[in-house]
Image (cartoon, rainbow, N blue to C red; front, side, top):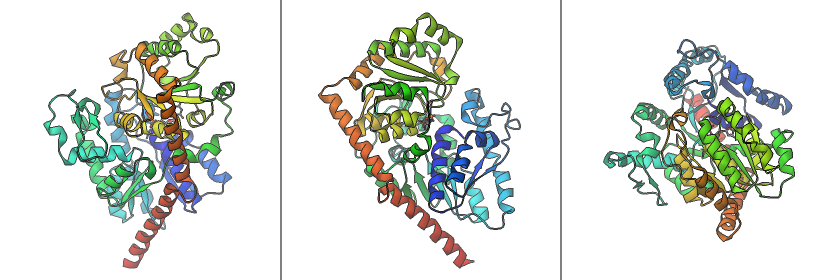
Length: 465
Ligand code: UDP
């Protein structure tokens, strides 16, 4: 339960409901409040979407009360407790299923809930796994494990290539979550639950990474790419009146860099200051989102003492808290996106057709950087090299210096042949993304095929009974 999973998941729920299906979202009370907009949306469009909310056993699992989302887990040491609490939802889910008059036709569960495979078996309900990551990541991880590549890599910093894939891609062990011993058991469990599912739904689109979709098709029973899911929610938020959108209205087309690092990773005040200085030195207009958790007295003091915003004289806007990212990215004034390479942000940048500066930090963000910079060639690297354990960002201090930040911004935003080619490629890929979700597009068709497949499974079971 984190925004990067709940946002695409609820978008998928809307899509299914728009196809005439009844959708129940299993959720917890505080997340239900945070995502209540979907219920209003369902009412407006007369869609069958309901929440079934189970209390999240935060305290029983040793978490603070009200800790129901990854963004409110106070420290990385408590992640196992968060996983434990999530696992404890199996019992209420089974009780709820027992009480139903008729069973659901299908369970679609996030990869992070591998125990739903037991529920599916016990109740004989087909199960499909939802992936909020790319097929590139899925296929590279599969290849690395299939050929046991990591076994022969001794150093954390020695680059090695991924064999048998269409692009020449190098990683270091330090960039891969699967190289971390503490994640090994969880990854194996996810894998097992994925392979026993009827198939996987991926928030990606076929034209984006055809060879990797095809590669992964041979690994799982079925695969349906139905994204980019973010492209479906622009209507809903188009009424949004955020200060940043008004500010962007006054800027030249493709002139502004949007800077945002997702919902989870955090910076030390020193790194934020370094970033601020890099943005200032670049001389390019920017919108910089500083999330609530990064906000500190030290940082605010710096902003005031430096007269950071005043001295920019309208060239930069600092947004404190949550920004309407999808809308900002699709504003015509945006010409670049500095991102931590979370898959949702990556896909949102791709869909908006903007080139990106990549600054990966943890999870599969280094994979996504390779997709942006090497496979699609629509990005410039800021030069981050080592994966951080979630929560460790704060301990590590300044990892990327202002000179490198300035250099990457100049490279991305400055006109010139290389920059223009990159921008043109990004525009074309953005168009492909939009076509994929339109009627007749690949993702639209895959949604139809997914529903048909589930219906076949249900009628096969009805026949057998
Ligand atoms: N997001 C947003 N406003 C913000 C920060 C994040 O709308 O100020 C959204 C963003 O559009 C994306 C999600 O939060 O859909 C972040 O997911 P991602 O996979 O990029 O990164 P994570 O949060 O998992 O690190």
